Length: 522
Figure 1 (tube, helix red, strand yellow):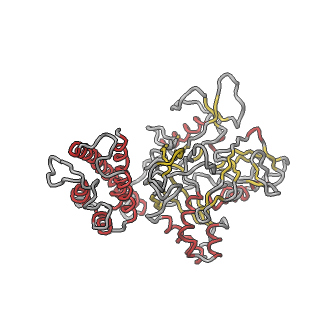
Figure 2 (cartoon, helix red, strand yellow):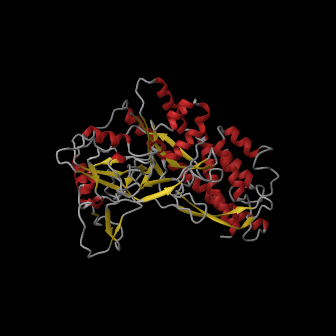
Figure 3 (cartoon, rainbow, N blue to C red):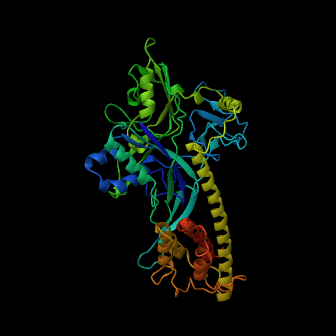
């Protein structure tokens, strides 16, 4: 089996709704489901492939696009919180928070406890920051539909998007059950890897507006934190690392009473509800090619804990069978990331999970200091390159902040010189900055960027009243309007020309918010 991990960085906010309803508030998932990557790759490759190759890549389950789960603040992999963990309802999170594992026993009802949800846990964490638990807080933006006949807001058409925040990082795995000597399958796998790293890849809903842009990059193959299963067992615990779509022998979805057969175990195993903790949800993924939703999926939610016990004391399930289940997953739609499990995870063996984390911390402190890798070491070169990229990214962010601060000053100057009333944008509008962002995201060279922005047919026209609003900069007397400021003072003087389209796109996205505040009078 081939495994290729990827890191996903959100260049814009991304909308991934939990449910299929068209009315009511839309709540966003706090991760990127595997079907979003499958759909993005299929949109690029499906027209180029034969029917047989398309089936192999996107329908057979031989290629699996995993869910992208968030990285912790220290850059560690994370996993969904087990639903058998509870905490005191009235106490906030903290280092000394007592966590109780209800899979072992029920506790006295002296205090009111609640199930822990909406968090992710990491095993290798930063002890100083205590970031073993990660929580993603989506952002909410209210919008209104536009009447195409008048160009104004439609009546009673207010809606909102809840989205994942820009800058958040996630990691997912691309898995394939291809033989190493299968040249055709390897070529297909390489095409998927190449497509995932394209610069114009967008995910989620409302991709034609201001959402969805991501950057995907390959990572070295990580060590699987799920240990290989070596012993047979008569008690099996499955921790769902992703949603799972199980079905019975009649093809009906299973949500409350999973059977041994539905998860790949022998029939002499039975489900133990006293040590199982389940949640479920229903949704219908939208197929952009068909322009309609697919069949509704009823799934067990990630983090659910399923426990099975053997009825026959003389029989046990072989380690090879358990390892196959853990590697291949369970249930339907595995090509879209569903069905990933961890069998008999050590984290669930402790009644108080804090004790397990303490053991991990102790082992980490006892590890000898690693020797410094030589220059020719591949890992060393990769880490050095990543450190250089992070340093460059920090410099770009600081520069963008200065640009934004200066832009605010320009708007204030333009408002004073043109006597523009409060509530009216005294310069380029949010829509105009959005046009700049779209051009910058699609431009492949600096010449193409400047041509589409500033030449006669460009967005920043020399006769546009908004781009040519008069401004005054004390130390730059030759810069007297927004167009010259962007072209001559910012783009022309940028020393990182190879990153210029990306820098301009990110700045334009921030400028949209600045212009929107000017338009609303804030």
